[in-house]
Length: 186
Image 1 (tube, rainbow, N blue to C red):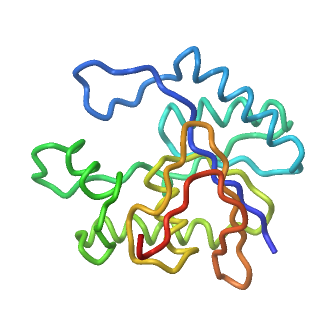
Image 2 (image 1 turned 45 degrees about the horizontal axis):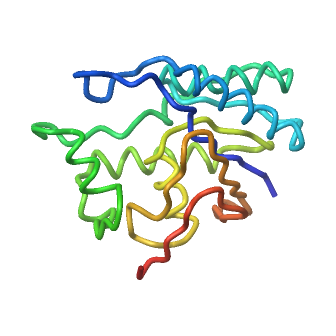
């Protein structure tokens, strides 16, 4: 059994007027990242993997330093992209991945489902205990698979939260959630 810890990046600086900007961590975010790194020490040795965004890489750097590891960037843990021509990306994200979304993965376009499949493939390929620093929606994509639910919004991982999953014979399983898990019919 391989243990995988899905860590949401710490709080970024707030961006004014720039939708979905890839900013650096806020001062509070740096404190969160340091605390998160401390929490991960009990699970070492861990491989450290990060999505390509600056806020993920900065959060991962705190853990790598504490764990005495290097950070491997995996492009598959990038943020989800709205379909081409989406006039308001933030509204699209809120409608499909937040709150009491009734959206299911099969209602989303092929590119979004390809992105999800790449996240799941990346998780299935992990062969040693690992912490993956990624985003809110990536965690939902992975946890929805572990719960065998078609819903896009199944949990609400806060900044610097940890959700533990395992991979057993290629099957992703939820071990311990650090989020609010919602069942498939809620």
